[in-house]
Image 1: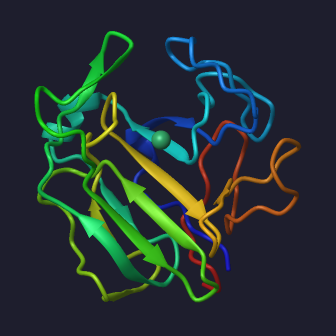
Image 2 (image 1 turned 90 degrees about the vertical axis):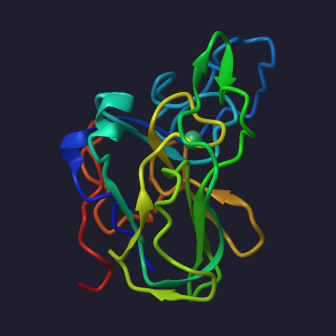
Length: 200
Ligand SMILES: [Zn+2]
């Protein structure tokens, strides 16, 4: 099984911030900048203890208010968990994140795939979750819209891959990650993965 990029419009995404492969935890580091991504790059290509890949919305809240952009299933699967109805304008505030007094809870969808792996899609816009628990989805089906709900400093998608035991896997191959990529097309190191589904 391989994954397509779980968004549909590369032009609205300006940065990828990936899984941290540096085991050291630096609790005193304000912006958690001590990290290594799959290629050994540091912040902003990763941040400390990060467990997924963030794709940040170019233009931030202005773009989100203009309609934002859809999040799609990275492969065929079944919806096993979700939440919606949470405040979606959480933002950076000093060294942390503020949800303006609302609960810091993400709108999200979790898919389980035939191999037992799970993919998680976090921080969606409030009211945008487009699927139901138990629903089967095909690769490319819309799950929701990019927002800034939960522990999110700006509108972005957090995409997280886990094995059947819940262990985080970096979907990118590289010298600091595993040898095999989980993407159908990992793409250029400063670009984005391809949007073709596994098996066409
Ligand atoms: Zn993230």
